[in-house]
Length: 193
Image: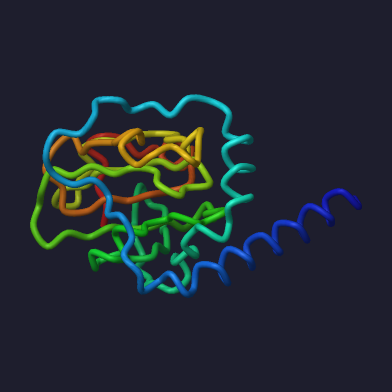
């Protein structure tokens, strides 16, 4: 029990440090998700998630703060389940995404909105946790990248980060905690309201 309490205290301290260190960076330029052109066709990040998280946490003063709680919220209905998600609609919000977030609750996530449908791609820059990426067009799922891992090497240059490309033009992208797409039975053709 003492180990669990100690771990929880350490986690709270790390998240607090991430928030403090990242607050001053919120107004600085963040590298945007890769959009347009021809991305690398590499879409795997390898293993070693524990080492990657440990490495990234050691560099916490260089990470943006998790913005999920500061964004406007919206309810989504997917397969008769209601999720309350943050909405990233500006280019700065989309660029930061879930970078710096140490956890995502099972009934939460981040919804990226685009003014016009387009083919787009995302990367896992500054991510600490694995996620599911759900590509949505006109309220219908067009594809799912499940269990996308954070970078195995947090010091890798941006040019070496894997890119995850939408299968079609999309007007929304939903990021959930890894495994939630399978748990909620989200697949191509699933309606999102």
